[in-house]
Image (cartoon, rainbow, N blue to C red; front, side, top):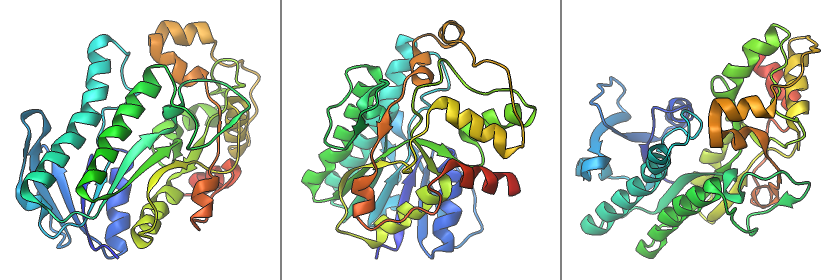
Length: 304
């Protein structure tokens, strides 16, 4: 089992919860950061890097056999201008290429790369078809960015690394989409978007964290995995489940599609389209979900 892990993008929604989870499971953590951050925890050390300048403190790789890559500008944080699209792509691809360069140049004995990916690989489409890992990549911007992202990760296979790309759905936990929608639902306001018949693949944060630990303990796993719960829910079902978790009902309509397009521009497609995604490959690996229905995770979050 791997013991020392190097993490990139650790200050994001997932990273902030993954680090304490891994520490509790007796892993030693190295974190790459753009700002020097002191720590008093013996098993958590921060190292400086500057991806734009192509610089990494080589000490960050000492004793490391696994890299968990979480870095990437927030896909839904800003409108998709040409400059923003370039930033979204480069923040994902160039950082992976920089890691590859350092591993190759210094011959670091890294065994495993677990890289973030997204169900956006299949593109922003709405369909009843259940998509699997072997299905074609989407032809829109989301499909292209995730394709390039994964290719940059899988390029490290030629260095002898075991590479996994986790095509995550929407992560449900303290923060993220839940933090934005729950306050509305708590007040009896419908948080639904668009027509509401678009599917919303999702994964509970607790299950995502457990999956990282599972992968570290199962070295035979490799390749791309859809990281989503088994339950296939539409946006309408998602919003109604969230309302019910607060014992609320709402007669307000969903936020109209045309208004979302005015507010978010091209990025609105992320909220208005969505299809079903299979997790059978992940289940076949032996991984077991703790939270496989929204009702369970919403009640858990409400009681936390």
